[in-house]
Image (cartoon, rainbow, N blue to C red; front, side, top):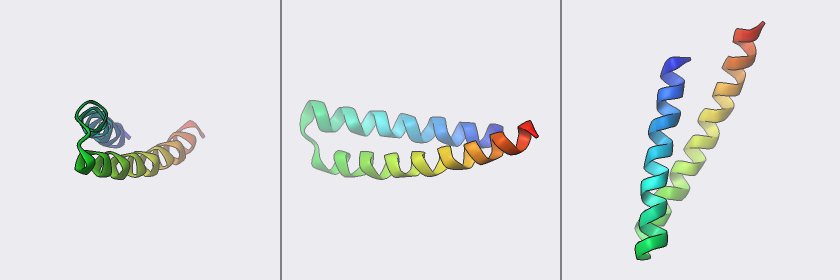
Length: 57
């Protein structure tokens, strides 16, 4: 589960970086990368939820 948390943190950092580039500088490619990262974060969070529920049993 620690590896999953690290992946979530890494994806979130990428998202923040690209989202800032899009909002501050109007970088359209960064916006595309931020949207892709947000989808990846969503997937990872669902995996975390499943692992967390399983670990609490």
